[in-house]
Image (cartoon, rainbow, N blue to C red; front, side, top):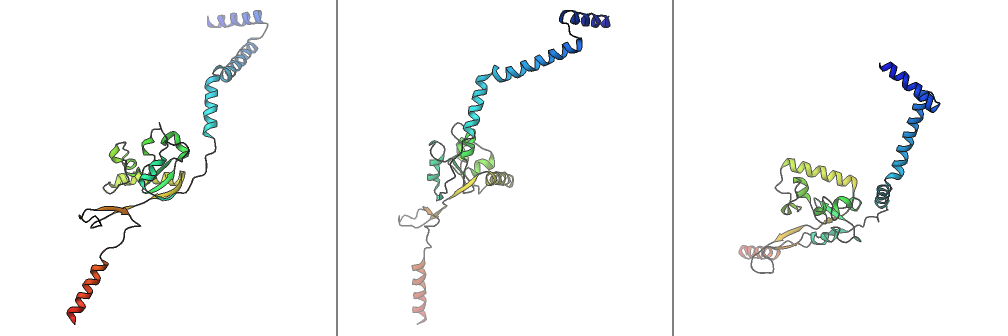
Length: 210
């Protein structure tokens, strides 16, 4: 039965098209391929235009990274992507990197936008998006979290340009405020105290020996 149908179909193709069955199916396949190519090029022109434009914008040359040297955490917040004229910066373990080339991830509206303009070491180590973890304090992290942070640091070192470091702050007690409370200053500005008292003690010892 199946063979008879096939013979009938071949005779019909030859009778109505004047082509052999093999030639007929070859022509059909070619027409289908042409249709597929044409619809791919012109059928979704809007989507194609949008993809081309997005690709061109992505390929625009970024300005070269600017070396900032040592800045404070407060100054780093200026580079969170809110000002498109400024580079997009982010820090890991006190080292600042220019992540402008990944603005789609770290810029406004990106999945990691809250890390921009900060030292996000703790948040990256814990894979946390909580506000209290958006800090560079990693003093109480466990070994697994520190390993995760190390992987992030290696990634940033290989992909982005380092443009500066964050100023370290140290607590200074017994300062000029006179109330014994701790005051904060940058590490470079901290001066050792107690020189005068040491000299007095030495002077007192010499007096007793005399």
